[in-house]
Every structure is written in C-alpha cells, then in structure tokens.
Length: 104
Picture 1 (cartoon, rainbow, N blue to C red):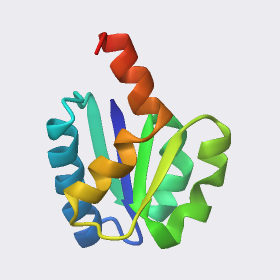
Picture 2 (cartoon, one colour):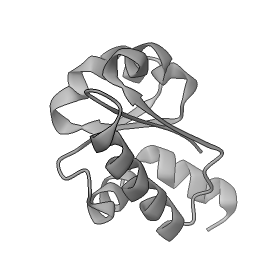
Picture 3 (spheres, one colour):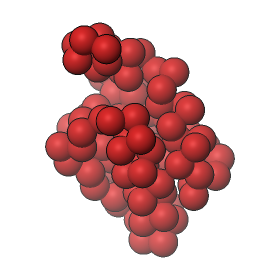
C-alpha cells in the first residue's frame, strides 16, 4: 500500500499521524510499500501517486482532485489515534478490495 500523510506544515502533526498510520496498518496486516509525510502544498500535487491519503479532517477539501483520480482520502480527527485510523480505513472499499485479493 502506498500511503501519503499530509498536514499543514508536514512536520510535527504529520509525524505523529504517520506513526499512528503505521501502527494501524500493522494491526490490519496491510503491508506498506511506501509511506511519505509532507505539507499540504506538496501533498496536493503528489497525492495521485498514492493509494490512500490520511489528512486532518479540516483539510479534506484540499484533496478533491486526488479523490476524482481514484485515490482514497481519509480525514482524521485525532491524528494520534491508531484506532480511529484503523476503523476508518477498515470500512473503506480499498481495504475490502485488498482483503478480497488476499483471499481473506
């Protein structure tokens, strides 16, 4: 899974969220091929290179173009909550498709 984590400046918040994403994906047994964290300015232009984008809830609208290109964009309220990330990702069609391909 190619994952982008994007927040306002791409430093503190995105680092905390990236750690939460890594934990959630490990719990869901989703292999991470690539994970990158960045500022919104970079994230908007590079999001289409990823399977899924995690961003704070208030920045969801900035990734509408990526969604139109088929990228899953997930807004997170608590960036430190691996539980929230796991719950939101596990209800997505991307997760269901991945699990179906894996035969689970």
